[in-house]
Image (cartoon, rainbow, N blue to C red; front, top):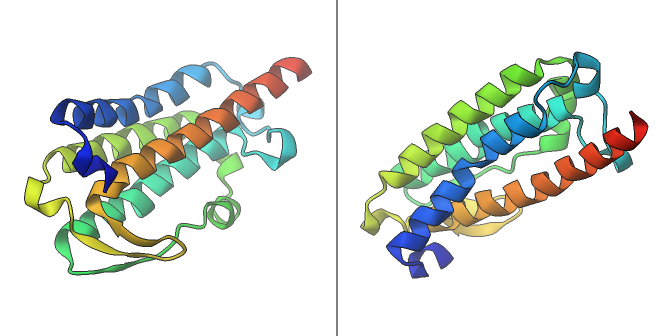
Length: 166
């Protein structure tokens, strides 16, 4: 419920901050070859292609679905998003990095637009997320920002490792 304690200016700042993540991903991975985009990081970190497709699919099937269901359903039970399993099943490493960046950009923009359209009275609509517990619509922007921060660290670790190996 932290979001509800933010000022309107701070709320907008948070939405703007999560809106920057697709640009960060696109910029940092710009110009990578297909082979580099499929190169995993240290300690089994996702490759750039895996990072982008994970972010895109989580944005659509995780955050997007949660936003929609919390806004439309009473007390929904929200499934977890098993990113590692899905990455393997969908063979993200074989997919286009640029297509992944664009899919993430479009999904994030749609989610931010939906979040901006939520009426004040709806922000406290809640459900239960598998593995997390009670979550409300107002929790999702901060959850998205925290997830982005963890992926920024992973991407930066990948870049350092890739630069040493190049």
